[in-house]
Image (cartoon, rainbow, N blue to C red; front, side):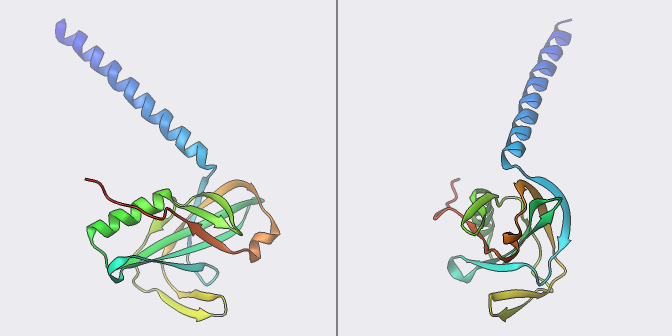
Length: 169
């Protein structure tokens, strides 16, 4: 009888914790205003941005804004050259705190972008900077709550992140 009561108490405690975790997850997802949509193959329509780290390590970020059901949608992916475990941790921390920016307007968290291998990536220089020439990478995509504006087609897409990130053990 005593074990049964203990099991009931533990089950209730687990259910409360699980309920709290689910509620928190829903609240966090709701705050972003993002709805996940299918991944897309990265092509020449993506903007290529670079994030340079110490010791010659870098992360390439590709971003694209487009119309999806009359709302602003964004796809993004990243790939890195070299890097240690600490670099990977710093990179993840940076992207968890960074935001997508279009024409200076903060759109939402950049944490949705995925990391893909750099293999097969070919980049070419053009008048706008750099463009993807070829890559088999697939980018994560989200649809925002923001209404689509045709101005987004020619808008500058970028990201904004913390000036400093550090690892604490």
